[in-house]
Image (spheres, rainbow, N blue to C red):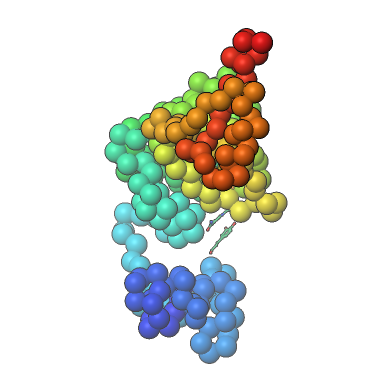
Length: 240
Ligand SMILES: NC(=O)C1=CN([C@@H]2O[C@H](COP(=O)(O)OP(=O)(O)OC[C@H]3O[C@@H](n4cnc5c(N)ncnc54)[C@H](OP(=O)(O)O)[C@@H]3O)[C@@H](O)[C@H]2O)C=CC1
Ligand SMILES: O=C/C=C/c1ccc(O)c(O)c1
């Protein structure tokens, strides 16, 4: 972004990207009415607040994608502590966003970084070049099963609307999945896939036999149950 109003609530809390008058670097209308052309311009006018100096050690070409792909993965990883020291973080999709997510997770001190990919050919790239600790081929049921329930967090950069359920199964209880991909089709997720039983929370129930159902229904109508009737069908059948 190159400008914002600098007066609204979002601007005051340093979230100028949410400013209603934000001027984006690319394809936005600037204050003078001109259309911004981002990296296609040979010169850009920007408010000093939105200009950062790159350290000399960082090559400009390799740093350029950090301003989109880099910021996109860095901000939520930091906000939700993905890749915190010692933690196990998964990265779905080894592309523009995913490969930087692996690098950030490494830099944050994650205990284990696992790339989850649809492409078998990326195994060596992930492990040898990017320094991931593990590679899971998402189409391989055995590999997915072995990794189930092991990850504190997952950065999901998949660009297509693949089902989330096999990936959700990789999370530990209370694990977090950050969705960054923008697939062209809607994502669907079953609420059941999000339910865990970690704390052993169970309901208070009154167990009844099948023969007591009618009486239970009458009590239900009066709100007279603490808090659920459970019909013990198995034992009722045995007794019969
Ligand atoms: N939220 C934001 O602000 C931003 C979002 N994006 C979005 O993030 C997504 C990723 O961007 P980018 O990394 O540049 O794209 P890339 O094409 O470089 O990488 C996307 C990766 O997604 C994986 N993938 C593709 N199809 C599927 C599938 N059917 N199931 C599972 N994984 C799949 C592939 O990885 P593999 O081969 O390893 O499976 C692929 O390399 C895009 O949707 C993009 O529009 C991008 C920038 C900013
Ligand atoms: O708000 C900014 C979004 C940027 C963005 C979205 C999708 C995509 O593929 C990008 O490369 C950038």
